[in-house]
Amino acid sequence: MEILTDKHIEMPAAQLAAMVEDAYNRTLACVADLDDEQLTVPLAEIVNPFRWELGHCAFFYDIFLLRVLDVTRQPMLENGDNLYNSFAVDHDDRWYLDMPDRQGTLDYMERVKDDVLEGLVSSQPNAKETYLHQLAVIHSDMHCEAFTYMRQTLGYAEPEFGGMSTNRNEAGPLPGDVDVPGGSFKLGADPSTPFAFDNEKWAHDVEVAPFKIARATVSNTEFAEFIDAGGYLARDLWSPQGWIWRTKSGALHPIYWQRGDGGWLHRHFNKIVPLEPHEPAVHITWYEAEAYCTWAKRRLPNESEWELAASAEPSEGGIGDNKRRYPWGDEEPEPDLANLNAGLNGCADVGAFAAGDSAFGCRQMIGNVWEWTASPFYPYPGYVIDFPYKEYSAPWFGYRKVLKGGSWATPQRFAYNTLRNFFQPYRSDIYAGFRTCAL
Image (tube, one colour):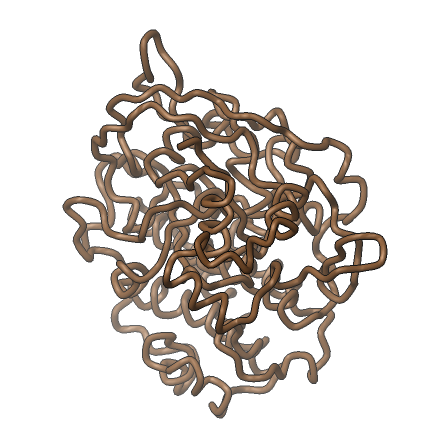
């Protein structure tokens, strides 16, 4: 299992234990206020049964951490492998499984968590063990964000663990482009990075032509202009696949928008509220982003351009050799740098968080909304399946589009410049928006 290099770091056991506790508590908080009826959701492609999702988070620690570290170890839950293995249990079958009830699920989660913490008390993890602990924690982080957009999909109240949803709309718009010089750029994660998924391996040289990219993501006001110009009905603005999606879905505007007497409204969890003009357009499919770009005579950035604009630094005549882990540098995210961790329980204006700008002046390349790129999700050169979670990337290559950056609901451990998220181009439930490039 070649998941490590000699440059990978060991983290103190106490730090890993704090991460495990934090992810566990956050996962519980995602559903703590929901009653048993709300946990029983209708079958749909874009959600999972809440009890299944909770059990799956615990199962991941069991199979990809505890049982990797001790191959003789027995499963923590009898028949758990037949319940919570996402690649052994078809999505639609998850509604018909004989799963533990709510309390039984919580008990299973607690037992797994306690065993993980006990192992951290008894020994100092080496580099491999550190990596596996991080993988399991970040997997939980991913599902915490999924819980959040599942609540939005189902029209539940906004999660109680988030911050206040007010006082986030004072920064306004941020129009204009920045010029990014071209040159040779290392796309992907360096082997010395504290953590990387398999699909980020490894940094490799790509040639990028000079380009102009928007300082901010497309705002609600800007996207409304596309709608008012008849963009959803103009066949020539849509790709063939995009037009099929638009026709089948009947979409005439983003999924949660609706017209009110005084202008556009949208559904934010279980409330209908006025559409904030300078917040980013969110819950946008890749097809909608593509059509907007055609209308605006712009284009989506490709993955190399996005990552260069987020992580490179200018130097005389081009770009320098230094590559930042975050747009603002290498220091961990702070509340004034990025809208992450559900700190606002929603999006902020596209002009907010100026302290988190990239070296080229692009804002919010981490946080607020995931950003669609033009790039299909493919492996990097030399990719091999050497990851503990072998099904994480390989089954999806070629079928999904790459997103970058993270959203307001993304825990900060799952948000950095080289990270590659990937979804089908028709998905509108995720917190996705986009920024554009000049043609």
